[in-house]
Amino acid sequence: MHFLSSMRSLGPRYVALWVGQTISQFGNYIAIITVPLLILHIQEAAGDARTFDLALAYAADTAPTLIIGLIGGVLLDRIHLRPVMIATDLLRACAFFYLAAGVGSYGVGTVFAVAFIVGSMTTMFDAALYAMIPALVPKERLTDANSFVVFSIQAMFALGPLIGGFLTFQFASPAVGLFVNGVTFVISAWTLKYVGRVSHHADVTGERPSVFSEFTAGIRQIWSEPRLRISTISAAVPNFVMGFMEATFVILATVVLGAETEAQIGILFFFMGTGGIIGALFAPRVTRVMGLGRAMTSGLAIAGVSLLIVMFTTYGIAAMLFLALFMVGISVLNIPLATIRQIYAGEAMLGRVISAARAIGWATLPLGALVGGWLGNTETTYPWIARLFPLIPIACALWLFTTVIWTDTYGPDYREGSHEAPKGPKAREGASSDRRSKDDRNEAPPDENVSPDDSPVEN
Image (cartoon, rainbow, N blue to C red; front, side, top):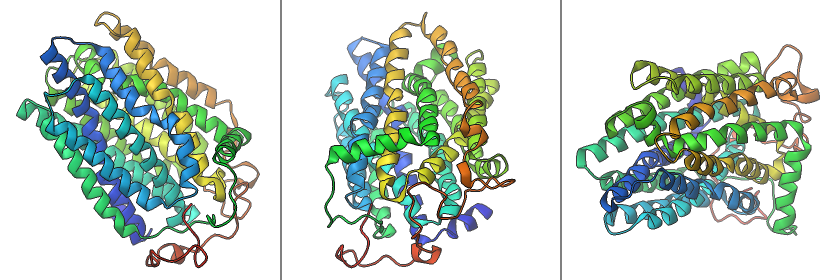
């Protein structure tokens, strides 16, 4: 009940955004198991099983975070955010309807191409989502708003693969799960229309620098601000491991943990998602007690140690519990990570900085998938690689203990004895003190046809 009342207090527009992205994430996480199972289905029909194909499909899905994410951030600072999210939902729906309708008539090359398209749309959707949140809620509620998003992501991470694995097992084909993928994106697009027009501080009627100039400005902002730079690195390093793990999880579950059916693989995903939900529920409290930087560092350490333990277990309650604890750490890491970006990005550069940080941080996902998939391409080498990779986030967490992220997350505006985000106009370098009130953020959406001269335009 506290969860629901706290969310409602952020206003109906935020609630509409949360519902829309939750349904969209449900589609994403059905795909995280249906697409690999589709590849295995194609390989079985062709009599050619290769772990590296799973890595290639995952790399195609995540590569757009770098290829498109950086330029996409510039575009998000120039165009309306809500239409971008709706359009990307509808395009992803079409892609999955195509895959569902043609199962058995195409090869893995088609899956790679569709994965790239879907990944491109997901990159734009997620960047627009995090750029939109600060326009809908007060800055002092950003941690809460981000935690609700992470909560829904982890809840869908639990439900999506479980349902996708069950549907594939029940119908002996991934087609039904792929069709459900498409339906979720259609529903998400319909829900997002209730967010209304989102106002930002930029003015598209004025003279704008070139796309390249704005792109490099976002990179410079990340590099010049140590908290942005360190948090971006601390996202890229564990994502190298996550890329390998997510891309080949169906192999990890069977070869390392000993799962025997698609349903059992779905159950392992379910426990991971459940751990993510628990982490998302407790992350705001942990962050208030420890501060953003210390919570982020502790979450990364918990995730790395738990994942290392998992690699030496077999399918059963121990593997399930430590996978859940692994995702508790990931949730505790992700919420302050997103908040740090929103605090230090600067009003006028929010879309560019968030997109650039996500692009750099997520660029290691396909790299980890390809490197890990190549090194672990056989059942003999795969277990060794799986047991070495968790050492990487553990090392990154130890490094964070020595940085300003651990000692002074908020810089000169950090208030002695408090772990809450600073609320004054100096709280964020380059930030505007001309913030709208909470009531302004939650007011009814203005007319969609208002001209840029009459109201702020979307960032």
